[in-house]
Structure formats: C-alpha cells, structure tokens
Image (cartoon, rainbow, N blue to C red):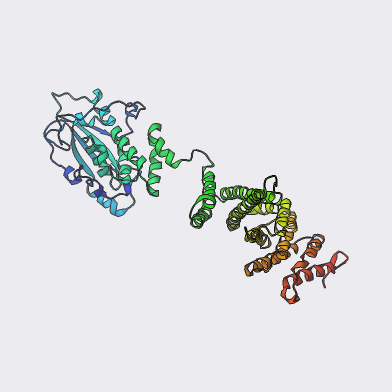
Length: 496
C-alpha cells in the first residue's frame, strides 16, 4: 500500500459499513475446475501504460448481469490472490499485529472482469495483451502483493468490494476510513474511489495524525485533486502567520466584546508561537501603531484648533483624551507582552525618543481639564514607562548608554509634573511613583558621572519631609559622591 495511516488501524474497519460484508466471508478455499491464466503483479510497478494520466475518461458502468456478485465463484471469471509481501517497507514492528498478519497471509477472491475494469490497473491487465482464449481458459488469475501491515488486507478487500458499488461515498464515513482506502485506490487506479476519498477529506476536520497522513498522500494526487487539500495546510505567502497574529492583536485590543478573555488568549498564542522573531515583528508593528495614535491625540489636545465654538472645541478635546486613554491601555498590554517575550528592545528605543510627546504630556497634566475626563491617563502613561524602565534596570533589555540616558532625561520631567499636580495623591499612584523613582535612580547609576550629575539634580523632588522616607534617593547621592571623591593614584584608583 502507498502511504496513508491504514497500517495503524484495527482490522474491524472492513464491515463497519452496512454496504460492506465482513472479511471473513471473503475467505473461500473452493476453486472451480478449469485452466487458469496466472499473472502476478505489484501495482504501480507495472508498465507505464497503466500510470495515472491527467485525462479523465468515463469509467465503464457496472454490468447489469452482475448483482451482488462480489466473491461469487459461480459467476466470476477472475480469481485474485491477495498475499502479504513480507519485504514491504511498510511492515509493522508490532509483534501482536505481525502474529495476526501471519495467521492469515493469503486471500483468494472471485471477481468479474466486466466490473473490475472500473480500475485502470485491472483494465490494463485485462487488455488485449492478457486476453484469454475462451476455448482454452475459464478464468483469469492474478496475484496481488499487499504490504504486511495491520489492516492492509482488509483495506484492499474493501476497495475491491467498492468496485461493485455505485455509491462509493456511502462507504466513507470518517477521515480515517478515507485515509485507509485512498492509498489502495491510488494503487489500483480506481478513480471513482480516489475522487470520493479526496472529496470527503476536503470537507471534514482532521486530527494532527490524520493531517500528517494527508500530507504524505498529496504528492500522489494530481494537481487538480490536491489543490483543496493543499490550500488548507499550505500558506499562500511566507508572512501569513505574522499577518494572522497582527490581525488577532488588533481584534483583541480594539473590537472584541470580551476584551480581557481575547487578550489572554492572544497572549498565550504569542507565548507559544514557534518563531520568536516573527512575534517580535508583529508586536513592534502593533506598538508603533498604538504609540502613534496616543502621541497624535495628545499633540492635538495640547494644541487644539479653536476655530469652532467653545462647545465644539471642548468636544474635540474630550475625544482626543479618550482616544489617548484607550490606546494607552492597549500600549501597556503590548509592552507587557513584549517584556514577557524579551522582545522589547525596539519599544525601549522608541520610548526614549519621545521628546515632543513628553513635552505635550507635561503641558496636558499641568491644567485641570483632563481630571474629570480621563483621571487615569497619567497612571497609564507612567505604567508604560515603569514597565520599560524596570526591564532596562533589571537587565532584561540591554539598552545602550544613549538610550538609558534619554529614557530618564525625557520621562523624569513627566513623573515630576504628575507628582506635583496630583493632590491628594492616591495610594496606588504613590506606589507607582515610588517604583518609578527607584528605577530611574538605578538607571542613573549606570551612566557616566557627568550625565548622572545632571539628572540627579532633577531628582531632588523625590525628597520627602522625613529623610528616612526616601532611602533610594539617599543611596543614589551617596553612590555618586563616593565615586566623585575617589582619587586617581598613578594608573589606579585609590579605594576609600
């Protein structure tokens, strides 16, 4: 048998359909008297004249004189001996299966030449080359080698029986059945059966194992037969997976009614995606899109067009703030996914190059208009900053010195404005500000002393009424002064 997964199926599948009699009924040791013409063949290894062609000829109809004549020795003119080919590359290694195969290694089946001509293989064998002399020969006799794998004999018998059936599709009721019969139908060039199996496989779902079997059989099919099967398993372009991921992200963060569930599902897909580089590209693209929307909304809010009436301008400001808030939440979720996949390098670099954006944020947060519209906007923006800064400080993202410096330089003023303009300070905001202060100070400690000096001077706003309440600030200045007071002795620093 050619490919397929028939070798792994149980023998009872022959007879699972009411139209197919049991295999036991096919074992008939009686042989009518008469001289036999014996022709032994292995299918698909015979002459080129019986290979599958691209032309589709109409197959001969069932002979009207044959009624339920399968394996009927009283009317048959063909005797087919099915025997196990022990040298087959499809031999099973399963000892239990091998015992079952060895116990019944040969079948003899009585067939009718007018019926089996539906198979191009048998039609070729019954051609003029093998035509019998009716005065001397009563039967054609053919030998057919069958791979000695589990179910192989049964599958061959089933396909032979289907030669007598005009309703082949009724015998195919599962994908596994189609996959068992298709290799045999291909082997015997039984086009009606091939078509029925392929049409069934096109229409039903497959398990992973069945999909592997389909893939192994596709090369044996003609192009027009395999096109639908290939379309299901072969991407039409190389970046289809990235396109799909990007579409899922957009749907999850913009359109899905159960956004939390959709985001959780997409996050799992990203974690399990086989190509980390593809996931990185998709996240970078989504990050840039969301960042652009937030940035442009804040830019319009900070510089509104007042050519319309007061109410119109206020409506535009509200819309800009809501747009910034919504996309800011999307941005935060994307940053969390990027950090989770250790794929936030581009995001950190982009976030450190937002001088105009941070300037617009400072202007926006210094007035009171946003407070009653989007009170959570500062928190969302600073959480994005905190996530990226923490990843840099922890070494999850290895950012260059320039990126580290600009990240603190541009976003430190935003933190200061938020602290100075939010009273009374909410508890969750206070913890966020403290976390971001500590993270900025850690990053400052990684910079050259001249840059650290400039940035630390801006950090005095981190101080509190009680010096003991800001140990992170004390530690940062202590570290800087310790380094500044270190004296160079010759070619070495003197440790103090």
